[in-house]
Figure 1: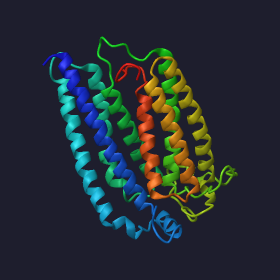
Figure 2: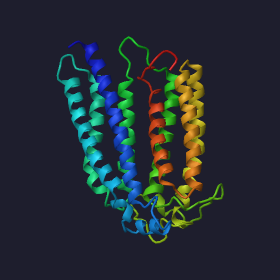
Figure 3: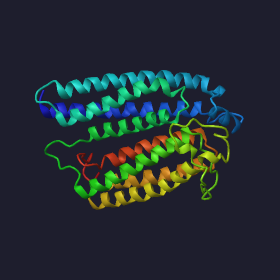
Figure 4: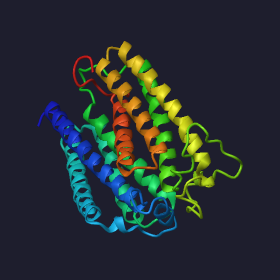
Length: 314
């Protein structure tokens, strides 16, 4: 098999990998939020009981059982696909070293998530949920980056655009970590109004990823979650500014479709975040927030150094 044909096959497999990861992280978000009591009744008392370890009745419904089954099958298929991609990248000569290293990173993330997975459903430690969330999002970005890796004859992303992309990526990951702490720490109702979210000295408990949610978590005005909510809202402004700046740089660099997608995604994500904060955590909105985070991360990943445009002007 020629190197060009192997790279083409690896790219197609990487797109399939990205699609499978998107299914897995969407189902994982649904199961995680259902177990946390989003959409349960009576609200928000049931959410507060879930924070103390009491599983809501909705978490054992047919939708959740079906989601778990599909999640397992899709995750297993993803592992098999990545093992095949690893063999394709490393066994034939000459080796596809650059693609192979990214595939090994993706495989390592899948194995990490496979080890973490059994602990996620029953654990009340936010660090476990945080690892599952960020691991899935980074895995998605790696698959998209691999799918868009340029061939040797294609010009990669230039340095100025690449630097802006890395800055936006770091801010996005920090913002996603804060969002994960809010979810895992049952702090979503801590600041039900905008912009009046000002933490005091005793309002930072939910920022500790190793602290199990305590009394009052999951209920309106939960004091322990005010600090992380405040940081998440400041982070949203920073991400909005950084991604819009990246979109402007991308537009000037001729990547106009990517710039348009970035601006649209970050604007939509900001609006969904506001609705989520003011709307008492609707389950569907929370799932949309998670999905948009993954897509926004992928959109930024397409502008990292070493990736290519899908078509002229993208």
